[in-house]
Structures are given as structure tokens and as C-alpha cells.
Length: 183
Image (cartoon, rainbow, N blue to C red; front, side):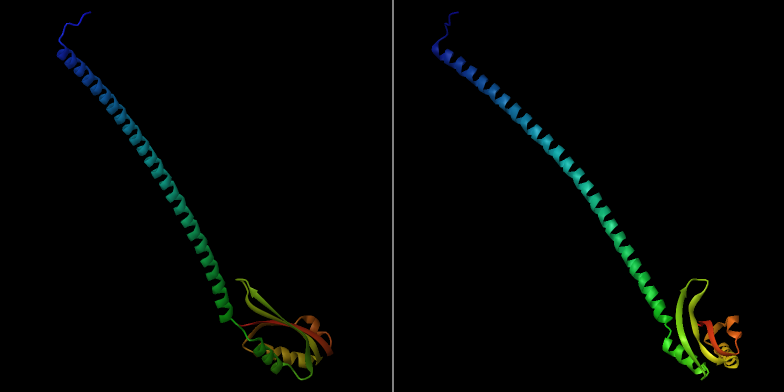
């Protein structure tokens, strides 16, 4: 094919062709740039959604940990409160054993003495209180009866018990007794 166009027209067509190529290349570059931006935007949105999901999971775990810590602290506080209540009860019900020994000594006849003195605390609901166990030596049955009657007369003592074996001998008696203290 022979091109009979003048050189200016040829140049003009060549220029037009180059413009079209530049426009096409520019459109292709723009298209790829827009596609690249959209891909980056979709990656950003996806990562943000993953971050939000991880943040919500983290906040749930932190909330559970806080609840567990609070529960542990509440259990410790309850335990301490229970201990304090027991201590408070103990100190409110505190009994002076020196006073008890003084009262028993005042009641004890002069011809008697103790060989054993035991105190047992009973914290059961059926029998709360303190029980005293005594054993000793007394010279006569009459002194033993006097001691028993004096214990029963004392308002701080209740359920005074002397076993029948105490009453077998008439002299040089090894006696046993137990009673409760009124709280």
C-alpha cells in the first residue's frame, strides 16, 4: 500500500495514533491502579474486621478474667469474714478459766485436792459450751456430798455429774466429776 498523503497529514495521523496509544496506556494504567487500590482497600477492610473480631475476643477473655478475679477475691473476703466471725464469737464467749478455778477452789472442801482438771470445748449445735472434767482425792463421803451440793448450787455450773463409783467407799475416795459451764 502506498501512502499518498502529504507529509504533514502523515505526521498528523502519526501524532493521532501516538495520542491514542498514550490514552489507551493511560487508561490501562489507571485501570490497573484502580484495581490495585481496590485490592488494597479490600485487604484493609478484611484486616480491620479481623482486628475487630480479635479485639472482641480479647475483651471477652479480659472480662472473664476480671470476673474470675472478682469471684476469687469475693471468696477470700467471705473466708476472712467467716474467720473474723469465729474470732468475734470466741472473744464474746471468752471464759476466764482462772475465775472458774477460783470458784471451784472456793467450793472444794479443805480435805480434798485435784489430781486432774480438763476442759473440753463443744461447738456443736446440740451441745454448745464448755465441759469441765475433774478428778481428785477427798477424805470422806460427807465431804464429797458437800462438794457435789455446792457445785449444784453454783449458778454458773449445770449438769453436775458424779458417777456411782464415787460413792462406794466411805473414806479416802478418788472421785470423778463433770459439769458444764453456763455461757
